[in-house]
Length: 187
Image (cartoon, rainbow, N blue to C red; front, side):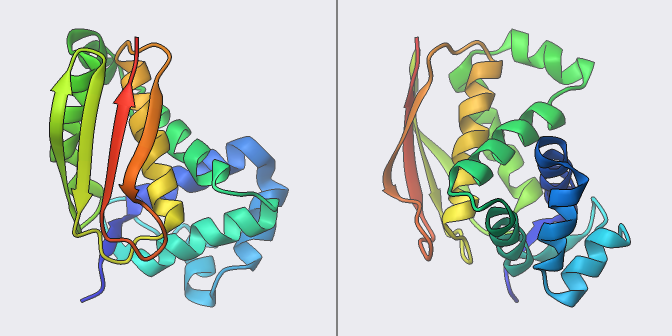
């Protein structure tokens, strides 16, 4: 079976894309999608709790980038905005104030498979001002998904109080790679 992504991820990036570039840009991007995926967006049939092919997620990012003539900064920004949107509840805001940035990223390894049914996230090393994370078995990923993930991790650290976050991909994280290692440093 092909790897899958939770519907909530589609809905989040769709909302964030529209918020950034407007309904007209969204309509243009949707015209670039395959018929079943386009219909899913237009008719609001992508349900938050359902699982969808990861190929559709890749296709969505590719259409968003093509519609905006954008590079990898687009999925990275959608990842940043998506986490901010998903973490906006009062309960989650309280959690952000109670844990260190590296502890919060550690908690996110448990949440990773709530969005993807492929791959595993593991914190390799963690201390004040530093975290080294590794993702393996991420079948079907491309550069857009890795860029979205890096933006998500970066903003998660910032929301937990990290200042001047510098996140770097150490290994992998390109189209066709099923693994990636990243490290982040902050003040």
